[in-house]
Image (cartoon, rainbow, N blue to C red; front, side, top):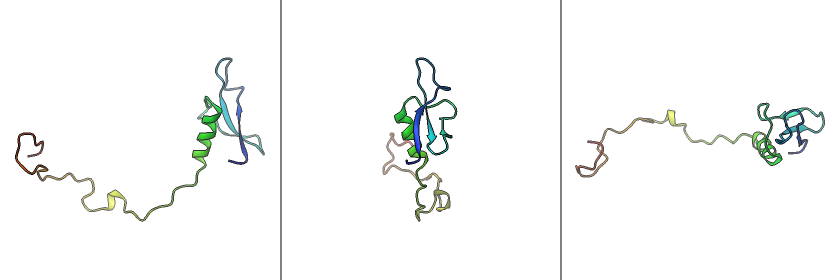
Amino acid sequence: MSGVRVVASAALSSNFDKRYVVVDEATGEVVDDAQGCGYKSAQNAHRAHAYKSMPPKKNTNETPPNDRPNAGVLSTQNSCSTSSSRCSMR
């Protein structure tokens, strides 16, 4: 997380409710302000910025659920081995 710092925002804070924003160190530009509300703690601001700046996960070779045959189709077969009265599917 180099190049950014978390500072208290005077514009978003009140007397009893301090709010924090993530700022670019080089330019002073606000990088993240929690959709204009500010973060309630500096730790939450750091945590959110770290999460948002993570590289995307690599795509695995797993087939997406919609491309598998019979994906999302409910089975119409009886799931019980016996025909007891507790079986929900008949």
